[in-house]
Length: 273
Image (cartoon, rainbow, N blue to C red; front, side, top):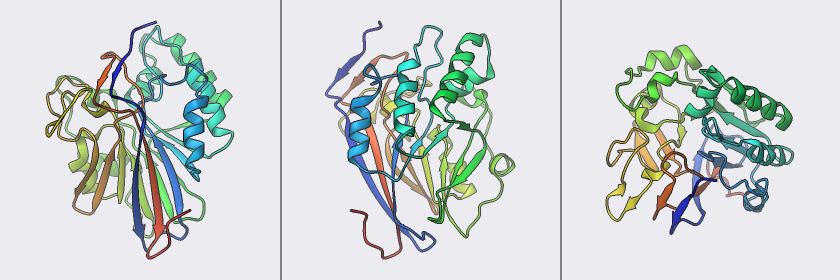
């Protein structure tokens, strides 16, 4: 087992609240990102109990819930997914690790395991697709970018037209949430115009420094602009989760793992109890 080092990194719950006139029913969402098979040694029962204590109406996965490593063991994570999905609706957005496995490049064994695990847990990863959250007036779209956009070196430019081709035009009659794993393209996301973008990928910058924020991105860039927290541009808000696990750089310093809780309410409505 690889050594994992957490320093001052106990799980924290970050809470956000939004209100919009298009929302027809108050809803609470739990948002998980970047689990990377971590926190599941007990089949995820401890993590589930924390989520269950928040009484969400649905759970959203913002990508990289599993690891695209040949020696990774995803079975405990899928046990957690099965437990979670037996109690709550789950929408699973694509991350670069899921994409790498499902594209199958030299990962045939891992792809078979993941497909079996998804089937056993009753989940499907949404790729450039969407779901409505019941009759709440909220639409959740899941953007799936090719692996070339996650390159540590050069990557293609993402344009609004590409998002429209993937997800269609924004439906302004509903409140739009877009799961987009990599936050670095927020300018383009906000040009497209969702009300709320949910991202992860940055692991909070791995090491967080006072006043400076996260130190390094997965692309090994220092002080990434969108490391964690809330950002606004045009009419869009983006929440970047610090994530629940780690990979490759098995360290988190002053960088608590994070569960995001969203309360999305009818305009002038009361907060859910």
